[in-house]
Image (cartoon, rainbow, N blue to C red; front, side):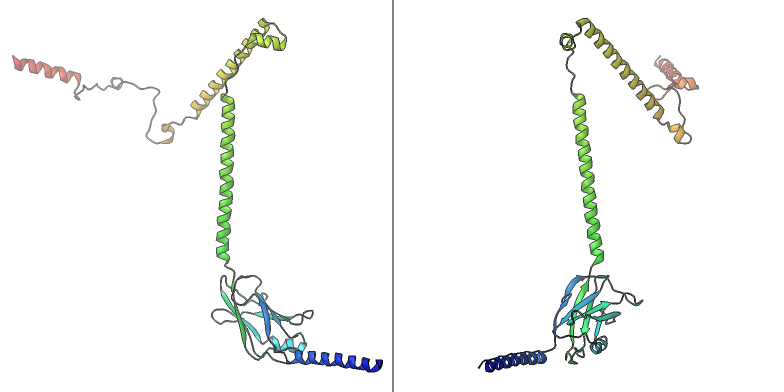
Amino acid sequence: MKKKGLIALLAAVMVTLSAALVSADTSEFKLLNSYPKDGQTNTSIENVGVKLRFNRDLASAKAQKNNEKCVKIVDQKGKEIPIKVVSNKDDKGLLLVLGDSTNKNFKVENNAKYKLVISGDLMDDNGDKLGQETSLTFTTFNQRLNMMINMAMMFLIFGGITVMTIKNANQQREQKDKKNDKPEAAFNPYHEAKKTGKSVEEVIAEHKKEEEKKAKKAKRKNKEESEYIKDSQLKLSELLPNVYSVPAPRPISAAGGKTLSRHGKTAKASAAEKKTKGRNHK
């Protein structure tokens, strides 16, 4: 009885396995998915490639040799770009279509549309063919636009940093000015004497010396600034031709000229005119 049960169990297992194998053999050979997907944009321009996933194994030497001629990538004008078709022995249902960057004719345009075409003659390890042509499109990365965006972001960042730096510097300067403009506390000799333990006369004498020292320092600083300004002033006579400088303004009479009256006449002409009018009046 036990033997019959064991035989029945083995028969059931064999039937199940046979059904699974028949189902696998009769399933339609097809493309399951791809990366990039059909219609995808902003794909890599440096490493152009498409990853194809099928429901059948296609890693045998015979399949690889056949499939190298069954896949191509064309540009918008229909011109093929150099590619390599590679099967993965560890993942036999995977087929890689890679741009051959070692080929001197390999050239991929920026922000351009490309089409991958899979021939119906693509073969699996069992020799079954795909049966119908399959295609998908992808668009390469817009590198120029990305560069412009990155540059704009960089300018914004550096501009913001510059503005914040200037703002912080101005705030620090304002705080420093406020601190410097703060009026000093009135000198109280009695308070200082009590604080230092010195006599009032000693405190007053020290304060007087300190004030004299500050006055001398301020005077010396003002003198140095005046000399610097004087030395740094530019004269037009040193920069422009036919322009001369004089040490001080001089009257026109010093150069032999005569001063004109309010109406543009000399004083002598004005006196002669008055004398003529007196004669006519008589």
